[in-house]
Amino acid sequence: MSDEFTMYDVIILGSGPAGLTAALYAGRANKKTIVLGGDRLGGQMAGIATLENYPGWRGSGMELAEFMKGQAESFGAEVVFVSAKSIDGDAESGFNILGDNGKHYIGKTVIIATGASPRKLEIEGARELMGRGVSYCATCDGFFYSYKDVIVMGGGNSALNDALYLADLAKSVKIVYRKGAFTRAEAVLRERVSQRENIECLFNTDLAKIEEKPGDPDGRLIVTTTDGAQIETDGLFVAIGHEANTDFLSEDVTRDGMGRLSPCQMPAGIFVAGDVHSELKMQIATAVGTGCSAAMDAIAYLNKQ
Image 1 (tube, rainbow, N blue to C red):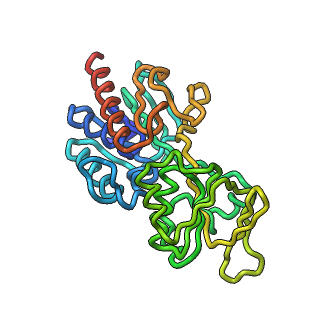
Image 2: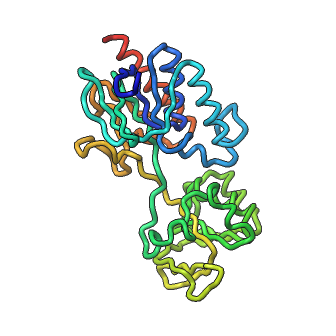
Image 3: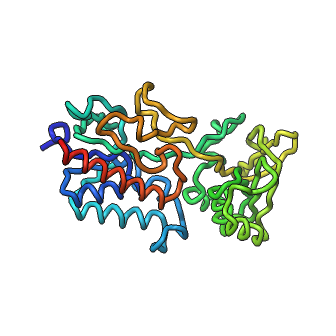
């Protein structure tokens, strides 16, 4: 039977740790479950080269995503790599989700676990040079900068993790941060950064412009700071926070300043999990917890109908 004629008990949007956990619980409860997993498995977790802070796991984020997917599928959950374009309907008539493959998926309940994406850098040249020197994924693009000079912009855990990853590949790494200290990053990461000889920290520094170095055959870049200083580099990696992936929802859905959703403000039959959940620490462990809670709430909701 084709997807457009199938009524699912639970449709989960997102294949990160929250979505895959929800799929595991819904599948184990014998609910007909499908995960619309977006354009790739694992969400942001997939880009973590070495995952150290998820209890009981030692490996990469992608390896964990593949393990979680297999576990959910073993209990009957279906995983397809489709992104939601819109949601219509309600709990009474069924939620109608239009996928970017043109198919419609009908569900009695929906769990939104679409996660978040890196916030884009809004300075002159950043958009034009995206993919040509400006990157938002160190583990995806770091290899191309082996033995070269790179800049990491940001001061949280993501930025310091990116810098440490790149320090194993690049000749030099400069971390540019607009504040005077890495107050948001974990102490263990700050200590590791301080011990790396090829990492330099530029505090109280912000960027104003990025451009190609004129006439440079190697395609190097010139980054201009807000105080007028210029830094020559091969690549700029941006890690300045995230915004929730909720653009597919209608404008009347309440969001916070990061585009995240409050579970208590969602219509009956729609639940929220992971980084798209408002007021949640953006960690794999918390994503898994909310994925569990959202699935259990959806199961209880279905059992009462």
